[in-house]
Image 1 (cartoon, helix red, strand yellow):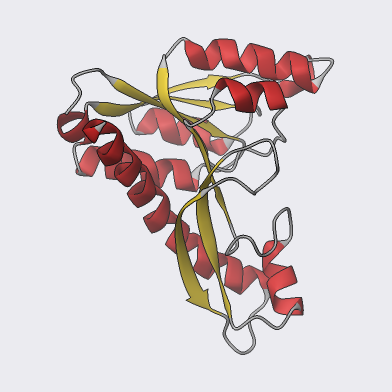
Image 2 (image 1 turned 90 degrees about the horizontal axis):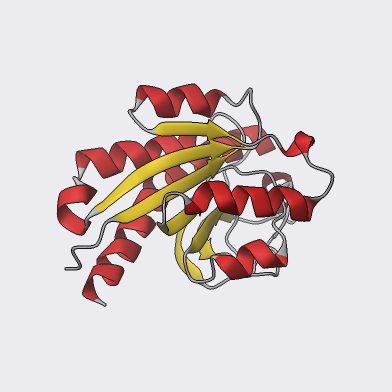
Length: 200
């Protein structure tokens, strides 16, 4: 196992439920002891994101970089990279981070940037995944953890979890069932990534 500290930086825009699931799992499973890994910081592009207080309550440093203070996506991403790189991250985790990232940002973190998407990719990349699954008559939905590449929601898949689509489901009820799986799948996929990294 590598003795080098593996810092994880999580990016959020809202409530931070997936972030919290990751932090709580990391603490409960002692990722620091097992892999030399810790969630070093949570950063939001929205000052009012509820996940910031949640991160602090879990003992994680929380910071804000408001995208509205920048004239371009490129300028914001450049500043965000500077803020993230203070922690020398082994992994950057997108957890409800509602920004389309520039190619320069994606390239900078190539191989160490992951996201979770609320569909069974390659089905339904982009937004409104649950309603689209219902409209298509799918009998199954779910979530996918994947590496982030320049093409939206098309990076190499790391893990998936499926849930049945039930009679009478709405987009909301389906989303709630999928999110329960997200909270289990995302921490496990990161743990698997850390285990693999420790063996390299």
